[in-house]
Length: 446
Image (cartoon, rainbow, N blue to C red; front, side, top):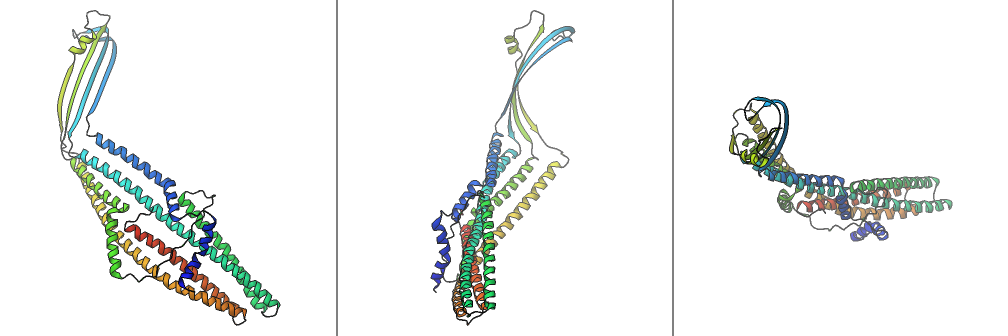
C-alpha cells in the first residue's frame, strides 16, 4: 500500500461524516466562540469604559464654570445694614454669583493624565485582541482533541467490526474442528476488549465535544458535527537550522511589534512612565486663573423706601479676577515617596517587558522546532503504519490457515491501532503547530 493511499484511508471516516451532515470547520467554531463569548463581551465593555475616561481626561483642560443663588429670610433682632444698629424686623436677602476657573499650569499632571488615559484605552483594545487570540487558540486545541477522539472512535468501530467478523469465522472453524477451544476463548476475549474500547472511545468523544461546546458557548444539548477532513502533509526535505533561525527571527520581529500581548506589555511600560512623570509634577507649583461676578438684593419687610430689585442688582454688582499660585513646600515626604513608588513600578514594568520579549522568542523557536519534529515523526510513523497494516494482514491470513496463534493476531491488531493513533496524533499536532507558527509570522487566527 502506498503512502498516499494510506492518507486517503485515514481521511475516509471524515468524508463519510461530512457527507451526511453540515459539519463545522475549525474556523466556524472559532468565529462562533468569539461572537458568543461572555468573557470577550466583558472586555468590550471595559474598552467602552476606558473611552469615557479618555473623554474625561480631555475635558480636564477646559475651564470650570459655576453659578449659584441663595435666598434667606430672617426675623427677630438683627443688625440694620443702614444704621448698623439692632432692630426687631424681618429681612429678605437674595444673592447671585458666577465664577470661572481655568488651570494654567499643574506641573504636567493633566498632560500625563491624558497620555495615561490614551495608553489605557490602547491597552484595553490590545487586551481584547489578546483574549480573542487566546479564545481562538483554546478552541483550536479543543477542536483538535474532539477530532482526534472522533476519528479514534471510528478506528475502534472498524476494529470491533473486524473482531466480530474474526469471531464469527473462528466459531465456524471451531465447529468444523479446525480451531480449538483455547483459540475460540482468546478470540472472544479480544472481542469483549474491543467492545469495551469502543464504548470508552464513545465516552471520550462526547466528553471532548462537550468541552468544545463549552468554549464556544454552544448549547450542550444541540448537535455539533465536526468537519474531520485531514489535510495531507507534504513529504518535503527537512528544514535546516539556518532556515529555522531565519524564520524565528522574522516571526519574532513581526510578533514583537504586532502581537497583542507584546503590545499590551509595551503600553503598560509607557503607562508607568507617564505615572512617574505625573508624580514628578507634584513638586511643581499649580497656577490657575479665576474670575467671577456677584450681586445681591436686600429688603426689610414692612418698611417703605427701599430700592427696587433692578437697581439693587445693578448697584450691588461686583466682579473679581485673580491668579492663584500654590507651591508645595512640605508634604511629610508624601510627594517624594509617591515618586519613588512610581519609579519602582516603572522598573518592574521594564523588567517584565524584557522578560516577555525573551519568552516570546523562546515560544516562537519552540513552536517551529516542534512543528518540524512532528512533521518528521509523521513521515516516519506513516511508513510504520503501512508496514503494520501489511503485517496485520499477513498474521490474519496465517491465523485463518492455523499458522499463527491468537496472541499473534491480537498483538498485530494492537500494534496497528496504536500506530494509527500515534499517526493521527502527530498529524493533528503538526496542523496545530503549523497554524501557531503562521500566527506568529502574521497570519490571523480568525
